[in-house]
Length: 299
Image 1 (cartoon, rainbow, N blue to C red):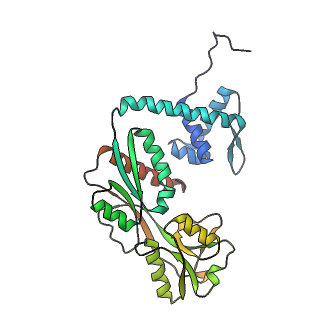
Image 2: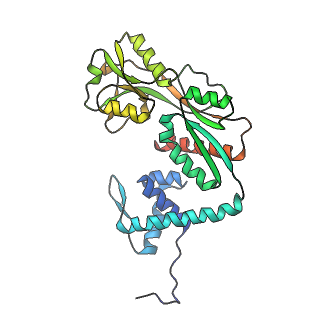
Image 3: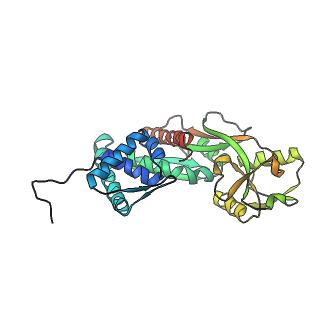
């Protein structure tokens, strides 16, 4: 039966839909709360309001996870479209006729982890700006900044690297990563996976092994994090990685496993001194991504 014309359907609140999408994408009410800058209790109230409006449950909750119901999955598509249309309409008035290119550099490791979040947010606020992304070693990215072929870049820096002019976003320990239940770290000489000169993690790893007098061989080389993970998960080698990269079948190996302790490293951001407004906006989005990471442990 169709609803009578004198009983209009309720209108969905865009702020509530934004919260709903954030929960669906993060799988957590708590993480979503920090994303939309609300308290967890306020987020719960928003979802209750949404479910009361629709007369349907949109999430299934248990002690460990939050998942979409069938109705929630249907709503997610509509919610994303409604939010996209709203951003498009508002951007025509708030940021009209702003176009151009932001040339952004990143090392492979953080390009894979951070850039999807940054690019998504930047596209929402600056839909007419193109982003030209360069993935390379930090030493090469620094050179590109000096040559003015990049507007902004992320740089991984070892404890001894020159950080002049850059803004540190994150500092964390570098640890040895091995396969859960693996035995690569027990072999002699020790098989390690590193990349060429200029890699911040390589320098610290080789310095630590030399200091410890540990016999090693370079068994695998890859400039991509995915390649390093593949070598570890095949139990071909162990590799130096930031502590935050550990999880799943990757485990941290310590001095108890016969591995020397390594120094910390820093991830920094370098922005051109004459940066345009879109470049400065991109830098703000990168800062926000790392603020979220420090608060929640997730990008």
